[in-house]
Length: 149
Image (cartoon, rainbow, N blue to C red; front, side):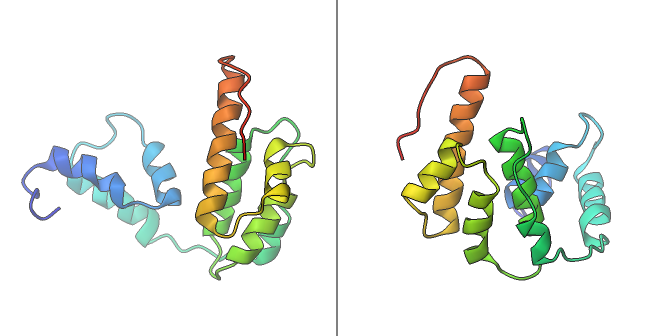
């Protein structure tokens, strides 16, 4: 970004590429035209995240999450990963099982994760994304696609 430090518009466009999921949700929630310069953007970011003192979430918070009646996979997934990201310790092995156990037993993703378990978080996220796309397509009435695990 140092190379483009004179081009504020470009810097504002490149800025989101450095953000993680929680910060990206914050960035996406900014109102249109609420930031007029890169300096304002970095100040807003700093006031939200650098001075933000959070209490780390315990493992029990993650274990108690489950998909709500009528909740979409996308919404459940967003809640789950936000909670996961707020934990200080690394519980990747627990993430596989708690995410799956929070999904209703008849859900296609749960069946897929049971029949063909994932071995790392990237595989889990890829599988979740496939099922979210199918769910979104079905909600939009585009089709009755099925994911082949």
